[in-house]
Image 1 (tube, rainbow, N blue to C red):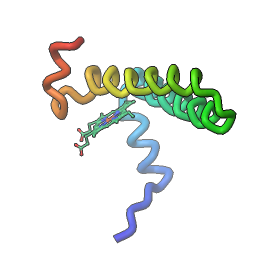
Image 2 (cartoon, rainbow, N blue to C red):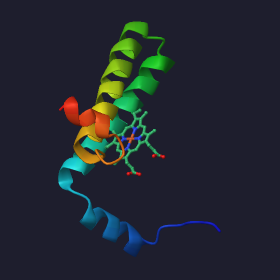
Image 3 (tube, rainbow, N blue to C red):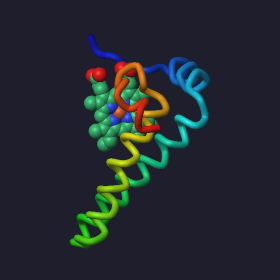
Length: 77
Ligand code: HEC
């Protein structure tokens, strides 16, 4: 079955997740777009820096919003 979100589904989702989660998600997408740019430009130092920031963003978001899934991160907070 093909899963598609109606505009109503999307609104329900956006209303139910905290703003902090949305801003982390936006920051994360922004970082990944910048990483793609750095890769296209062949900027190796930039790629290394952005990649590290992106991996840190994965852990940070999981520690704040996905402790059920990653209980080990509770100690990191
Ligand atoms: C904006 C928040 C956020 C960011 C950024 C984020 N995640 Fe997650 N991630 C989540 C949440 C919330 C869950 C828990 C979903 C659940 O409970 O099933 C999750 C779950 C996961 C899981 C487990 C999926 C499963 O099937 O149980 C993996 C693997 C994962 N993330 C990898 C990553 C990686 C790798 C990155 C970075 C490249 C990343 N995530 C960035 C929020 C985020």
